Image (cartoon, rainbow over all chains, first blue to last red):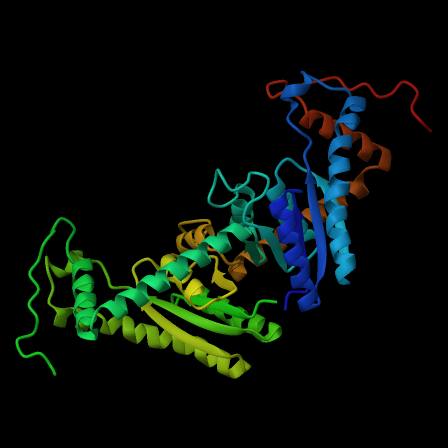
Length: 206
Length: 206
């Protein structure tokens, strides 16, 4: 269904992991990929009041090298998978904007992103660039969480399942039903009321 | 690649539009769909301090009817497209949590959501339930923006393209280059400096 996927990268491990999945996704759907790296022009605070064009050119060598490395990684993945790939790099200090514009300019129908980027997992629940792309994008965005999230969720789900099974085996069915009703009733009470009397039906059904 | 898609619905037009795309996506990828509706048990503020179980049962009739309607819509879409569909409804006042739990419990490998739900487009840049699912999900989330966003972006991109073309045709190439350099240089200056003198090279290359 999706024919042209925009795959932004910031070179981080999380974004590389996402790239691997994106290429597999593109291969499965016979889609092509446009890989994007937004090269930072950097903060001027460190460079003095005014810099010469020659110095500016030197400043751009670093991002250029990174760009080749990061986009090269995706190009190789695509080549190995037999997925058509175009790599573009742009100068921008607002990657989210570069991503949105690239999706428009190149008529992409999906943006495939990692949930987090270079900012990592620690600071935010959702990466800031990913959040901005999500809010501004006119095309669908597929957000891939890091493996660790998937594992954590799986472990939690298993635990919940086990506890549920234990509860059911520990109590006869009617007690389970009554308990469930009490919990439901309790959950509908005004906050601040901390106790109530539960009357079981006088003529319980057999 | 994705084999089992969780498709939450809140019955809103936006979520119905997303459902149509999700079913097409599932069909293309030969995936199956689990449709989910989280029935609200409602705020207790309106119901007095404590309510009887019988009253509680009556309260649940409304959500049950909605659930049938909303899930029925998806089931019909799936049937028409020949996509395997399971419909589930749960009681929850925190739909995002119901969505996360359902994805875990049913081993879904993708959650397909609308960018906005019942809250609509007006209040938030990204729907609050969608945002919460994105932050907590261990499986990838595909977020679909409303059609209006796509159209708006397309119109903007066209306008930008037109302006770019006008600029290029209005100036000779070397002036364009110099202007670009000036803009680039200007963008690297300390904030607060509002003017500078640009010296063109003394021996311009031919």
